[in-house]
Length: 207
Image 1 (cartoon, rainbow, N blue to C red):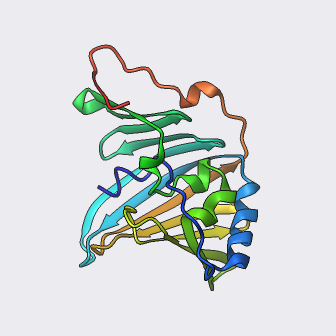
Image 2 (cartoon, rainbow, N blue to C red):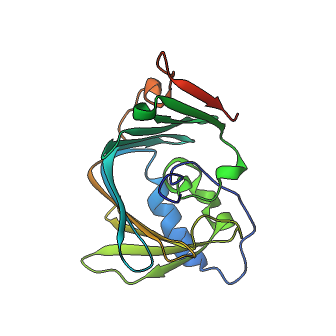
């Protein structure tokens, strides 16, 4: 379930005094330099024994505030798209599209890093910094919400580019997302984040 719900947004809670304010400030500084981003992604998920569960790849686009497009190309096509108020999950092979409201319920996932307000990260996560290699900057984020879909999120930067996100949940399932062909702050058309269900598609309206 974690891999399917990866890119909707956030419940915001208060930051405990123990949080690393310096790490939070450094992460915020990196993210605020990015108003939009496009990249190819490869995503792999393993279980608690390290056995492969799923592998996907595709193309993503995000733009602040709240716009994102996560398009899986292989092994099966899927589109998750938000215009800032509505999320669509479209499965072409199933001829099915699910419409959801973009609200606090989707606040347990990492999308705020890319499409939300980075200044609010410290309200949703305890943030610390780890030692990286090869010039990497590595941050560890632990959700403060008790019902979060993951236990921790590790993000890696090279320069100003977010190159990797690694998630782990309470059952030991791990998801690793790598970004390549990264373009920072491209001008993106509004139409990229709009979706109209094709004719013949079954629409499930959960709005």
